Length: 199
Length: 374
Image 1: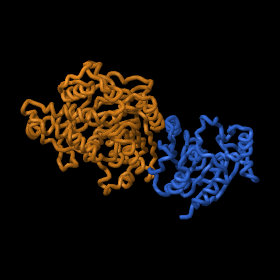
Image 2 (image 1 turned 180 degrees about the vertical axis):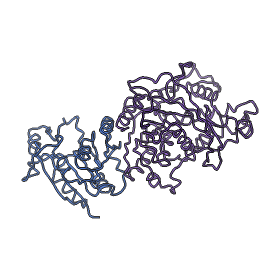
Image 3 (image 1 turned 90 degrees about the vertical axis):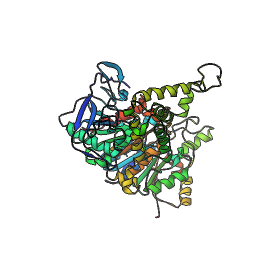
Image 4 (image 1 turned 180 degrees about the horizontal axis):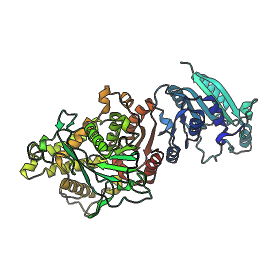
């Protein structure tokens, strides 16, 4: 597959949105994904970021961006204001895991969540070798990592079940961004879920 | 921020004969507005930015006068070639609002009906009245729609008001350190300030001009109180701490702590040039400001009338109009699907942060304005 913008999860997300959809990107960085979706998929979008440099970069990119802290919820957004709420590679950095997932499906019809799989075989091997894993999808040393939650595909799916969230689609990628079909919890480095809930 | 000042500027004056119906029910039969402009209006007249002033501001926003090189505009640091309000690209307009005391018609101007100064007879003006008057100035200048209307504090409220009163005439609204309406605490501070003026024996019911005096003591107290609300606790702590002018306590009521010295100086300076009636009017305009009142308090319904794109900015240490107040505006805009960006800027200068020259703050305004298509 092609690696749009160097982030294979973006390609999947682009396939799920339709022209005219409203997209909220949480932890949107400089707005690269939103800009791509706006220009190539005809969506309207808003991003949320906490970091000053990203706020400036997103405004330069012409993206609607709201400075805020995901840990404090999404109060400024109304119920069901968006078709898709994206949380790309950020869930593992948020303490209030259940809170943010509930907020995403409060303000959006669907949630798109991607995160690094801590049970990926290379990560397991690193731990067996006595080291915390550092990889394409976990590119930090233990002492400078923004990650505060360490979980696997199975862990996440258990939480979804507990919370009553419906997994509409799941795609698992290896470090090169190739789709993994089998033994996903062992062979997958990054997981992308499309979630919704009964209303 | 790189860039230069606009340099030498000149005051301009416009007279308006068409009566202005005011929100308070009063009518101004005719009035003057003083204003300044920086940069050049393009042929399409599409590059104009209106900068609205706050409580004590005026038309002298940027640059200096040829004969007064030290008289620099109150928001000079953001306006000029290469600055965020880039005069190589934009045509900037600043004016003194109605009720002001810097040249536009106000309580200290002559009332043509009586031949005396207006004083207490000057009608109460509201933010929406200023916006109507500003629209007439735009007409005079040939500006059908502003590329942006912008302001901090009460100035930001005017930008917000523009966006719902003249939605076709504002393409962008930049609302900084503002609120959709005042809180009880905000009104309380304003009322203490007003009481200081109203109870000054030299106030004479607002007609102190006839008595050749001014309620300087009340105005000074009002400003001292207001000034405290413009600064952050941390900033005052860093700037003054508990520093004494002399090393030992004097056990008296003269100036001892540096913060007392600073506030008294600020109060004296302000009371020396500002008009007390104008101060009263400006604080009432703040108190009455609430565009959502037309929609039973539903700000989302109010902002549905806007068509502009918005940049909303607040400051982390601003306890007068906190970030939460700006986020009320953001939420109302988001609920209407408006294009809006919101920056919460970490600056240590409290409410006054909006006047500071900070690289990130000015970078945000600069980036936003550079994306505006003219």
